[in-house]
Amino acid sequence: MKNSKINYIKNSSLLALFLLFNVSCDRDLSEDATLSTYSKNGEVFIDAFSAGLGYGAFGGSKYSAFTVDSEVKYAGTSSMRFDVPSVGDPDGAYAGGVFIDGSGRNLTDFDALTFWVKASHAATLNEVGFGTDFGLNKYKVAFQNVPIDTNWKKIIIPIPDASKLIQEKGMFWYSEGPENGLGYTFWIDNVRYEKLGTIAHGQASIMNGNTASETTFVGVTSQVDGVIATFNMPNGINQSITISPAYLNFISSNPAVATVNSSGVITSLSAGTTIITATINGTPTTGSLTINCAGVFTHSPVPTLNQANVISIFSNAYTNVPVNYYNGYWAPWQTTLSNDFSVQGDNVLNYTVFNFVGIEFSSPTINATSMTHFHLDAFIPGTIAPGRQLRVIVVDFGADGVYGGGDDTRHSTTFTAPFLVSQNWMSIEIPFSAMPSLLSRSHLAQIILEGGDNSVIYADNIYFHN
Image 1 (cartoon, rainbow, N blue to C red):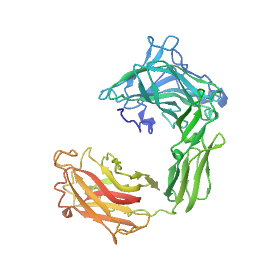
Image 2 (cartoon, rainbow, N blue to C red):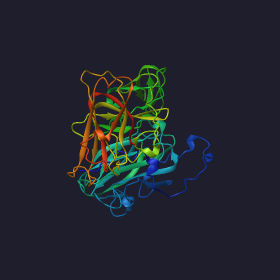
Image 3 (cartoon, helix red, strand yellow):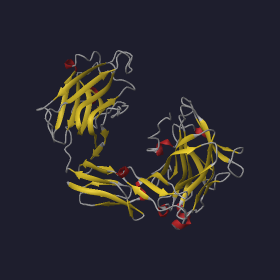
Image 4 (cartoon, rainbow, N blue to C red):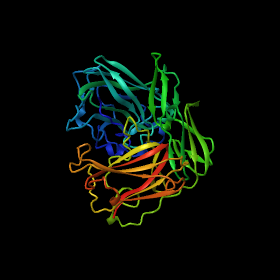
């Protein structure tokens, strides 16, 4: 099974640990009198780097994974060779990087990125594409789960809207992890942009084609995601790619409630409802996002305790300890999703479809023997159903400090009406003296919230204190 690498590009400016260029990229942009003067060279790698191109590895990847191979090639004298590491390789967990032209190229004359690929054995290439540049990645495109084998195969990745690629720096990127725990080698050759003229106009979707909805507040920003484009390829088969929202044109049905910019960022302005839709090349997309703005947000109470008397898990008022995750999504029973938001610099955990959720801080665990209480602020925006409960569970991993070591202990505290209320922050204070089944608090590692009815709950100011 492959290692998951879901988040490695989200903060790619932090992941570019080195970037090697064949030529200097410190050119003064004043040399380019107009945008039309950016290079229109469509070649990326034909036996060697094209002029101005360099390579940068993703952080956490095996930096030596990429080399130029003069023995194996599709055509010409050489190809790009990628050696994927096995699980546990000390040099890196996967192979991944970007081929960048630091000055940018004008790709408006092309409709696809093409290349040839083969592997040492049959495999599934996690992701390849273009538009990643260790910056904004504004026009990123990803072709995922690409089957490859020991024969050379031509891969075609459509350009969703070439008119936007006036100065694109990210010429090609890839990411691949071990197959069934083992590394292998694949080769890529003749990487270039082409004008094929045989790719049918694409259809696109937002929110993965679903009719989604979201409750927000004035000043909260949301993001259109799940953007997928499907094209009919020269072989007659439909091929889907994941694309950046920036390829679309967005519409808000009620701009007084919320606006949406060219990157799909929605800003809520006033109470009310608006529907966000989009088009690609003038064609409406499927899917939509309904924004229900509830008006001005009511902030949780501002904590007043001194930092010295607090061990904070989540709060803007304090320095938080390292947290593994705020939503473990413990399959298969958990339904809870996260849609966290920030209002005027106040970060809030927003759990939707809430039935239970786990917050873990086990690396390292927390020694709270000097603390006397656990604190949590919770807010239920919907109605309180009859019999609704909210259980707060504090877990200690025991002397060995690891989950399931045989010495874990926990205590559950249950809250019901009339304590549970709607549309108001509830400040939960639980003294450790009321947690007799928590035998130790020297290796605290989890907080679990249970008892939701698949509705919504906000959480803030989660900390231990004395």
